[in-house]
Image (cartoon, rainbow, N blue to C red; front, top):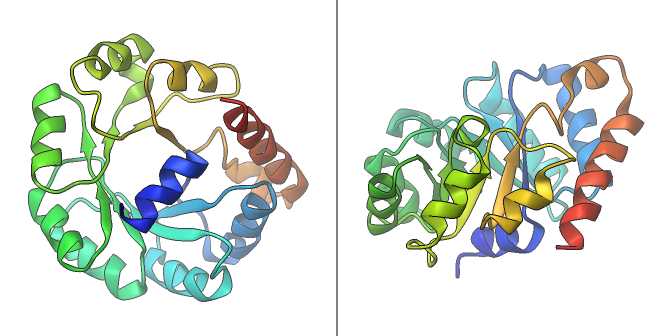
Amino acid sequence: MNGMLELLLQHKIVAILRGIEDRHADHAAQALIDGGIHLMEITMNTAGAAVMIERWRTKFDGKAAIGAGTVTDVALAEQAVNAGAQFLISPNLDEEVIAYGKERGLSVWPGVMTPTEIVKAWKAGADAVKIFPMGTLGIGYLQEIRGPLNEIPMLATGGVDLHNIADYFKAGANAVGMGGKLVNLDWIRDGKLDQVTERAQQFVNIVRTL
């Protein structure tokens, strides 16, 4: 099993940092790590994403795995890999991105919705898939597709909060991707890093009991 997939299945939460400013990034990452987060992605549509990924790989080496999100095509995959991203996550299924990552020994977790896309991604070599947008699809949807597709690791992204995270796992998610509900950019910009850490701890504690 790929080391990143192993981390994903063990820790079950990926923190998504989208639109974070470079000057706040390191403090935000440290606050999340202090709260028990072990996987973080910076989305490639964040200004300066590659620079931040590269810096985090050095700064947080051994503390957290650093990946790239919103990797919609091979050009972005290349940027992310050159910056040192350890895993690639997309909102879409691009088989070229999966091939590009696989050739370099990287986990690629593409965004999929339908059973056809899920199986297609799996056959193309993805070692997990990101079910997206879960906030709209709902937990019932996950439960239904989980029945026939029980072998494929699923990262459910969208709509997760403190009140329903346990339900996502009961419905069959292996892990969850979380943006604003976990990474509150207003708190980060206001320097309320203790609150960021505390929020992370709350999610981590729930997941540990599942």
